[in-house]
Image (cartoon, rainbow, N blue to C red):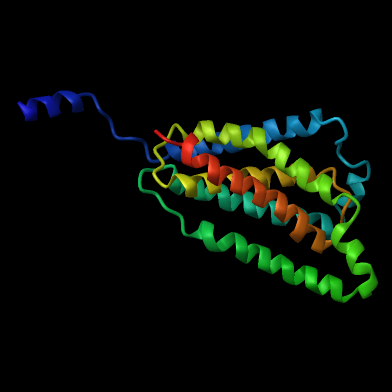
Length: 214
């Protein structure tokens, strides 16, 4: 009785295409960037900085983009592993701190080239609270889109998958926000940008325990 039942249940099953998960994540990342850009555009006091043509010629702008995009990429590739049953990604534990440490060294070098009485201004800038707030807020719709995509898979490490979701969403959000951010200090980047991304990661890790159940 058992064998016929198993045969009946297994009838018509086809192996899952190996690239299906990659397609889902790529689609989710694209859709996440789109909704994040829309959120940026709809925000009442956000806009692409008027001097963006000049800003893209400066190293500090690309430092911000390199930092935020690298975090987003790490989170996205983590999802490729974690969306599968029993998938794990140890890289999600040590790579983000390693990235932060590299940029922290750059920030320390930058501070060393400025008088101590200017350090406070270099760290706080003029938009610290605004930066953290908007990176966190823009990450919310991106998190929602990525969560819907990951739920199509079968993650079993829910907290870790949620952390990857948050890193991907936070990194994408911070990249979008950088288009309108006038701050150029590397130490501002590793404090306030990093905090905004970390908040998105924490929200993803907490929410993943419940929203990614299947």
